[in-house]
Amino acid sequence: KPHSMRMSEEQIEAKLTEYFATNPVITRRQFQFLCQLLKPTACRVIKRLVEEGKLKKLASAHSPVYMPVEGHYGK
Image (cartoon, rainbow, N blue to C red; front, side, top):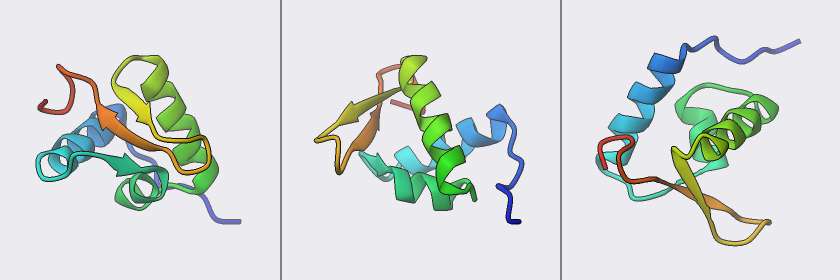
């Protein structure tokens, strides 16, 4: 059974900081591939980052995109 790659919080933060240096928003799918996570894990991590106030959800429920909140990920 496939598993998500184990990444520390610091590694995820570093990947997102690097990504947002050149991109204004990220999708769940892009985040999933960036951090090498399975879809359920990527959804849980994104949900947690939104709840912590690090990412802001934009767009509709069916095609959301996320942008960094000021003060996070180099913004």
